[in-house]
Length: 299
Image (cartoon, rainbow, N blue to C red; front, top):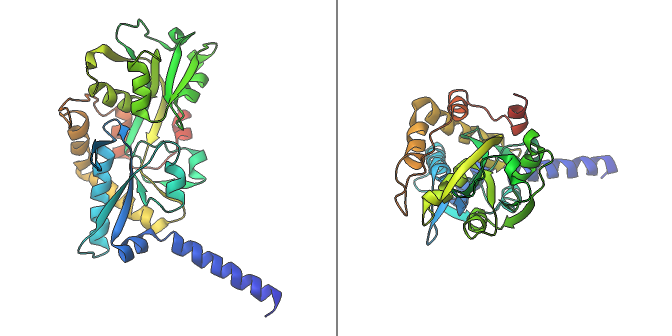
């Protein structure tokens, strides 16, 4: 075969292989299984009850999305396999096909869009500071000389350093391997503050032995669109996920699911997170979009 024809044949094969690798709907239908990436301690968005059981706002949304996909594919049964992911491995596990849909607390930003895709935004997060209630810390400026905890693989401290009120504030960083570990650094006194998404802070505080011992303080450090993460270059799967989410937004069902996880008592302790949906979150439901963090930063 002529060299140019061989090159064309190889290119066509590569494109075909890539299309097959990114055909998540086909993969789900052929296997009868969908793999959901979940978090163990992402506040009320996604957390574990132990024994392989995961719950939360994003977990329930993904369960409903997969239920709609099951109907779309005409499948009598769909098994959902849950895989716990971390801040460090969530993107590679989605990109390499280990996880079909990631339902945790992931910010949609331009850097991540190079490797993965995002569904329409379902939650708009505010990054804040959690401290012990008796610490006297109420602002970013008071973190000078303090030890600040955050979770490995997250962006919160980067935003704190870039914040206009963070200029000239020098603090030491300590890293938790997950959000529960980071909160433990605060709880045990090894850190003076924990900088993270407010929903994660509120969720961990609600599950503490004495929730009143902690409070969320200070300026809003960053506003971030949180979305369900899926593989890149799979438009059919993205459309199926987005269509399901948009239907829940239009019907008002998403607001009911939010209320269930953020405003009502939740397991295992039957405590309330007590974090009403922000105006930015309500706006994302009213005007579905998959805009990245950088679009929010322009405002």
